[in-house]
Image (cartoon, rainbow, N blue to C red; front, side, top):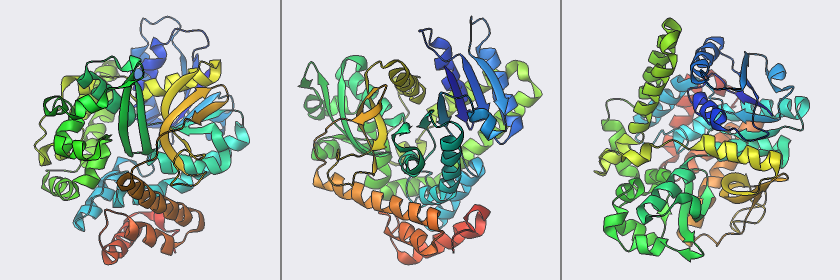
Length: 446
């Protein structure tokens, strides 16, 4: 099986390769093509992968290229993991939003809108090339904002594009550990949008164990989401939210924490990755060690400002375990290529799963996956407070899609102004102009 990764010079690619090296089953990936616009980053990541493969028999062959059509030509699966404007863009997204006193996170709020407006035109071009060059390939989208990008690409690729995220997997694993059960033995009732979902049940042998956890403040305080949200709020909503909902439920605290921090998350990652890529260029013998050290630091500091803002403390050791999105991607590929039926939480077209949204809206829900792709399974309706937030954010995503496809400045303004975390039309207008002034990629908005 042949896999192509677009954004192949990205920092997280070795996570995927590690999963591929561990897969010894029949029909595994034997050839990996990395595509990126930056040849130096491709070379750096190839050095890390070469060290990972040392001593591994029949490790997947790796080739690199900056030619998109050549990368796609023979692919059975395509991973899309691009970052338009790089981490420099993310850091700027955050800084410009915080200047206006609103959140600039890369997928949530003003920063997510700016990032989406830059990313969708590129994702659209990529989807068109895949449809033309590799029409039979399955596309797995990692690119943020994942639900929004997947929905835009589906206009050209239909149900052959599927979005994945490791947040629901990590949430399910942490809650299962708090319950004292094996995550592999549990089924999870989870529903919403990417970075905007709720875990409503954890069933083992048909019995929902989540109510017992919600009734126990001590156990609720033993894992990250319990610390972030606090037991009173989790008990009030009768569910465990995705960690990204902290930006909505504790917006004032999140903004204050970000403004008080020495640097934004994007600025931290930008400097960290500059050091990593420079180190690999000058000393490729230590490529893997440099990457692994940076990875551990990255995971340990994840959402640090949010935890500090609510006094949640440091991340627990089991929150740093591997087995995130790369394992979801591997399970998804195997389920499709070998018809190994699996149930995974994915980003797919709604098809009536959440009644509050239309058929084509991409949602994040459990899906049954086989050789015919991913099919969402029926889930209970979202409660009113959750459905209202989901509908509001989906409406913003649709305005971003309209702006990206038509170049409409008015649609972009509506996206900023109607987002739940932007509290003023005047602020929205200033944000739009600031982003347009600082990002040449947004000159198309008129």
